[in-house]
Image 1: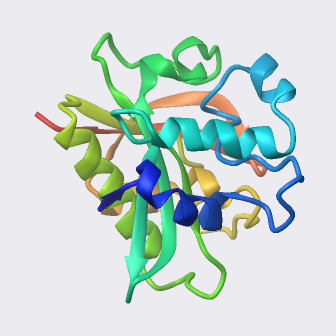
Image 2: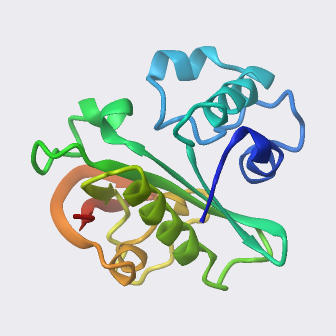
Amino acid sequence: MTPATAARFGDVAVMLGPKNPGSSVCWCLSHRIDAKTNRELVGAARGDHVRDLCSRDVAPGVLVYQQGEVVGWAAVAPRAELPFARSTKIPHVDDLPVWSVWCIRVRPGHRGKGVSHAALGGAVAYARSQGAPAIEGYPVENDGQKVDLTMAYVGTRHVFERAGFTKAADTTAVSGGFPRVVMRLDLR
């Protein structure tokens, strides 16, 4: 597990940024910031915002490396800092100050090699190192069906179960046509 710090911003950009720096791609911000700010941040401003996040005391996620090359990413943060805190579709299981992992990315050419499992494991380890009492994810319940790669970033229930998470609640959210569930892992 390698936290995404300012010193590693170049690798964060490899995982999240566009080939054309002026493009307005997600940069893993769509579930990190409110909708108004998300619409207002365009082009290079999105990358600048992520660079600022990487400079904070708490990293915005973790990176996965294989043989010195960055191959994976998982976004992780306290749920209270995220739009999930106000979500009407993804319920709160209880009042515990949980952390959330909501985006897992694997670079093309490295899929099917356990990178998503390493990224999720890294997110769990990082949340634990920061004192999180529990961590949640909101993956799809796809029952083994193929998930479109553009929507696979939320993960699948199976990946979370392999990491020791258990289903804590149903949601009214969907991703890529599949229902999402709340998966929870106690870190105490």
